[in-house]
Length: 213
Image (cartoon, rainbow, N blue to C red; front, side, top):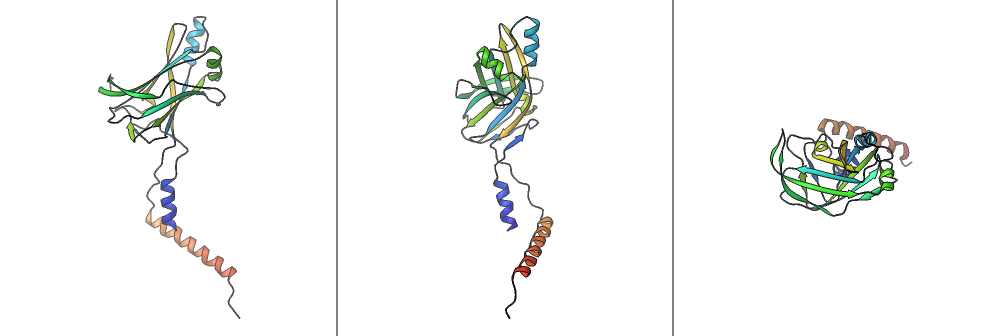
């Protein structure tokens, strides 16, 4: 019984898991990565220039070590409360590129997206100054991540409008739809738990089963 429960737990799908500090992440078809970011820097610079504080365009680059097989993504941006959203033109696929940073210098796979927003929709999405960028994957299993960096730092988001372009700060990234492997059960704990369950079952049977006269 206990072995069956552990096996079931090992296959349970995860709801949402914070993977911000993971160096790499396995993506299976249907998995989503959601990046929480803010437009506060753009709003501050725009206000100082007397411009509209909400961006009219969003760019992003997700950088990974070279991937042998691709797959595709759909991308969307949404207000934190879920009341307003927009989809990037797509689907989006990986392109080959080169990266030169302090931690990595070499070939890379790059996922790029570009979205235009109306003034009204932009205001609705960034009403709370934060928004979610969600990338949903379809394709064969892949492992994404750039050596030397966490997943949170593999994404670059830029916000533009009125001739102004400012990099956005992303706070975290969560995985949805992935499968979390349950830890291997400790044999001693299993024996103790099994013993407790058997004792409880035995006590219950004694209460409900009466000997025949």
